[in-house]
Structures are given as C-alpha cells and as structure tokens.
Image (cartoon, rainbow over all chains, first blue to last red; front, side, top):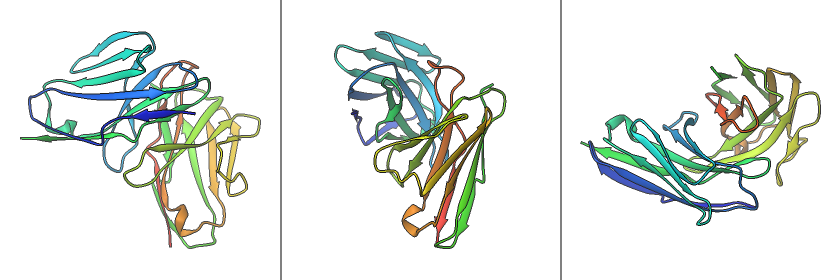
Length: 108
Length: 115
C-alpha cells in the first residue's frame, strides 16, 4: 500500500518562499508528482520527479530523494494566487496515490 | 494539449436515482482513464481504472455494481452512480494520461449532491 505524508497547512507572506515536504512509503516507485488544487477545482499538474535531484520550473522547484522517500516542493516569490492546496502524489507499479494535501495561505 | 473534459460540472439528484458522468480526452487517445473521488478537505481517492474495451478495475471497497464504468472508445469513459444515496455526495474527478510515464491530466470534476 501507500503511505504519503505532508503537512496540513502552511502560511507565508507574499514574495516569500515556502517549502512543502512530502514523505512516502510505497510498495513500488515510478515517479512523484506535485499538483496544485484550488478550492472546488480539479488538480493541475505542477512537476514530476522520477530521478533524485532538483527539477526547476519557473517559480516552482521540486526535489526528490528516493533513498529517503522524501520530496519537497519549493514555491518562490509567492503571489496571492498561489494560495491553494498542494498535493503530493506517488505512482507505484500501476496507480497514482495522493497525499492529503497541504493548504498554503499567502498573506499580503 | 492533453485536455480532459468532464460533464456535467454539477448535478443534484434525488436519492434512489442514477447519475451518469462523462469524461472525454479531447486531443489525445486514452486507453486508460482513472476515476477519483474527493470528499471535502480530503485527498483524492482512486475509485477505479477504466480500460478501453474491457472491464474496469475497481479499488478495494468500491462497489462495482454501484459505480458502473464504461469505456467504449479511446476518448470516452463514463461513470454511472446507480441508486444514489446522500453519502455518495462528493466531488468526482476523471483523469487520463498521454503515455505510461506521463502525468495525469484531470477533468474539471463533477460536484454530485444527492438529496
């Protein structure tokens, strides 16, 4: 089975940086994904890591350490529109399982 | 690219009736689609994997006779909630991917309310 843990809530100031951690224990591993979900909407894809290291995409970066079962999503230069839930998801041999999500609130 | 369309976005139905939700891949073919359910403030839970031309694969605890899945073409999967009850009220989201190692792309979801 899958066990994916991430913090429930985080608050940060506009323009700041926030790091959302995700730890996982899975029976198999075929990649880790980060999604953004605004309230009442479907998730949108942010990033994908399958090898160890950092993937950078504009203001968003994601890091993976497979040996530690650990990933983080780094949000830089926070904007008000970044207030959302961020979901860590791990794919094993056949399906994608999601963590409970981290609600990030950006304050002015 | 990789657009997934889901319809309807919202539906209210009476207890005991059935509701059909459609999921279409608009610009790619999807031999496999995934149906998730999300209760308020909870994560997405995979309900079933829809396979084109064959039976769906249901996750443990999901009743296959209650949640009927049909994947008749490479671009369309449907989920029918049969004999709906208030506890079936939830956000249902379908998803598909363009390749085995590609990320999932989600439809906009269907908010089902059973009264």
